[in-house]
Amino acid sequence: MSNKTVTLTDNATGKTAEFPVREGTHGSPAIDIRSLPPETGYFTYDPGFASTASCSSDIAFINGDEGTLLYRGYPIEQLAEQSSFLEVSYLLLHGELPRKNELEAFEDSITNHTMVNESLKNFFHGFHYDAHPMAMLTGVVGSLSAFYHDTIDIHDPDNRMLSAHRIIAKMPTIAALAFKHIMGEPFVYPQNRLSYCGNLLNMLFARPTEEFQINPVAERALDQLLILHADHEQNASTSTVRLAGSTGTNPFAAISSGCAALWGPAHGGANEAVLNMLHEVGDVKNVPRYIEKAKDKNDPFRLMGFGHRVYKNYDPRATVIRKTCHDVLDELGMGDDPQLELAMRLEEIALADDYFVERKLYPNVDFYSGIIYRALGIPSEFFTVLFALGRTPGWIAQWMEMISDSEQRIGRPRQIYTGASKRNYMPLHRRG
Ligand code: SDX
Image (cartoon, rainbow, N blue to C red; front, side):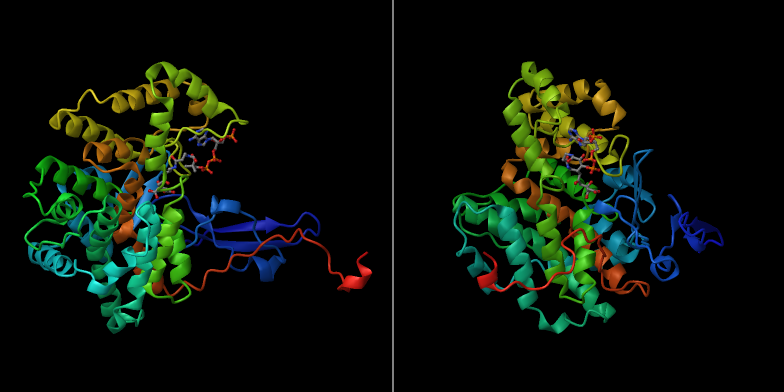
């Protein structure tokens, strides 16, 4: 806590009030306004919470101006290059990189929690084959709260950690069940002999008719993509998980609310929306026209995968993914992929256009990720499921931090009321 303060003066009355300043390890200081209403009678107004810190957190830090992202202090570029998704998951949960024995124990625990209760598969038979996979994921992840009555004490740290292991382990299985349902193919059980991403690829693409060969390029690319999506401060879906969790609800129900929030095209649904946008633009020769559409306030078209509430520079994840995109497509013999060419041309023209430069709109994590997913044989409506899979350790780590934070209370924002003044009920016969 800083000893700095900020003084607010009400110009109508000349009254002043002093508020403490909170400073963190990095980033802007914040005015602690918890005493604002009782001291001044005022609330603050901040739709979208663009100027509001909802909590203090040790987990992730974004410097939007520099375009940097840290997970527990480690730069995302170093983790993407040198770590693994399960090691990063451990880091997010525990705050430190694991020793060899700790990592092995964590990987073993995750591996042995990948199966779901056999009855969970029945839920998929209730969905039509054309159900969106995010609809299925949101529903079935929430149904996990109907199981595991052995870990419902959210104030028991061991219960919380076991719930965290379970959700990290079971998300790929549930994701793959949704995929197989859409494809009309038999479900594939997890295989303990495989890596986290090898197991995911096998559950997605293996068929009873032939031996499935896991492509190591795909396995490594997927692991890196999951690392890059693992956490991101108080984004919309993480804030949703925290708000839902603040009521004391079941952790799987809170994660399900995060899936629901992530699905939106302004958030995690943007990766699917980028591929749909590239399909709509169709050809490089149409790029200038679509750039103009994106700038036209009267046109609903937006350059999906561009812009960010916090990054006012290149999203560091996009930088890594852009490079991986080229490496993976080259290694898969798809280096001349027309959609990659189109995306690069779109980026090149946008970044030279004053509209995007003035508004500091740069490619974000979603701009290139879908191109890799598609190259790995994953359909676009499934991209956000993979985003959810990657974000799960971040969601559950933030939920754990919120539950054990003594300053946290049930989330309950206020409002400015603009409706009708108080009035009396008018009986029907007198309403004319
Ligand atoms: C993710 O929060 C997170 O951390 C999210 C995320 C994570 O890891 O959790 O990083 C993941 O959600 C990335 C963002 C994915 N969404 C998209 O790519 C959708 C396209 N982007 C936009 O919808 C938008 O940029 C947002 C939602 C990402 C940010 O919206 P803001 O912060 O509310 O910004 P804004 O809408 O107020 O835009 C500021 C200006 C506006 O123009 P003016 O009114 O100032 O003239 O920029 C314009 C906007 O019209 N603008 C765009 C644009 N994004 C913003 N114009 C054209 N195309 C765009 N993509």
